[in-house]
Length: 73
Image (cartoon, rainbow, N blue to C red):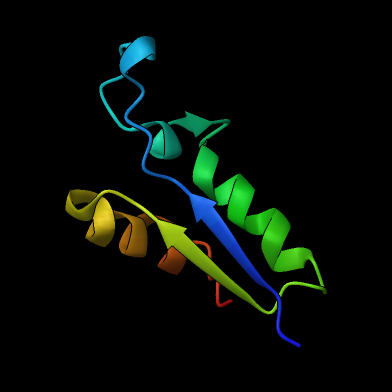
């Protein structure tokens, strides 16, 4: 049996008055979403990771998070 993780990462951060969406806000130079994905990447029980992001941020996520941090699941 394969186990899949679904990460909801389409938050806009409106209450935070952020200029960028919450998943892309950096903490210590690394986007919040990268920390989240990293935890699932390290989990041996998780076979695959699916992300839900805003359609206009799909390329940004692919380039600045998935590729930048070498995530592969």
